[in-house]
Amino acid sequence: MSRAPGLGRALQTLRVGSLPPTAIRTATATRSSSSSPLVELREYALKPEFSTPYLYATGTAANLRKSLSPLRFFSMPDTGGELNKATHAYYYQGGHEERNAKRAAMATNAEWKAYLESCRPCMNSQSSLLFVEAPLVGQMDQVLGLADEPQSDNGNDTILEIRRYKLKLGYDTVPKFLNLFAQGLPSKLNADGTDPTTSLVTLLYCEVGRLNEVIEIWRHGDGSAAMEQSRVAARNAHEWREAIASIADLAIEFSSTIHKPAPFSPIR
Image 1 (cartoon, one colour):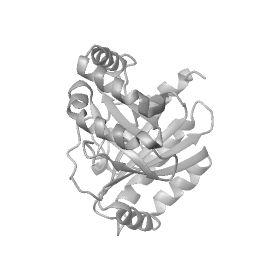
Image 2 (cartoon, one colour):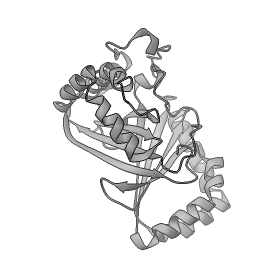
Image 3 (cartoon, helix red, strand yellow):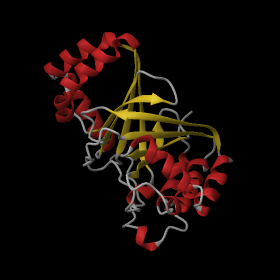
């Protein structure tokens, strides 16, 4: 299925509904197809017996990876889905052109080629999906975004909560989702009792791969206790509850997976 031509235009004119003025930065509504920033999400299914050697080799080569590519996070699932799946995300400010150039440079780097050769036997499969950050990421101060390399606390308890939605097909399904989410999010972020270490990292919608997929990524600095506390607090956020009720009508599937960031992950 190819991207419907009307979807890009609909997203360009997306309205953020009831967002309060204090939550809005300068909106960047116009997107250039040649230079729009992209987020690449790569997932490598590892052979269970080789998961530890893979992570050791990858940690050893972490600085090399960061020097060659715009890594934003690297994590492994702890529960909620398939285990032993290395999950890493990259932010390409220059879109496809930057991604192509950096990956071409990596392919000719002798150290990187040696690292890949040592790691490939550890893998069962690899996947790559390209996403775009939702407009609210650039409009709400409380959403971290991936444009800049994160400066996260180095807490050992940090978890990432990756929530994925598979939406119904349609030209306007993703814009509707993003608008509803933007309307309800402030009430969730500001709900009384929300753990102070909980923050929304980003909200993404798929550009290349599983179209009509949306992903929200949350960071909980104090681990699962922070996640549970923030979830309980959100139950009293009226606008958020209304938004999620409407989003449920757009979704076919929903999943939530808890990840542990690797020691070398920028977000941790």
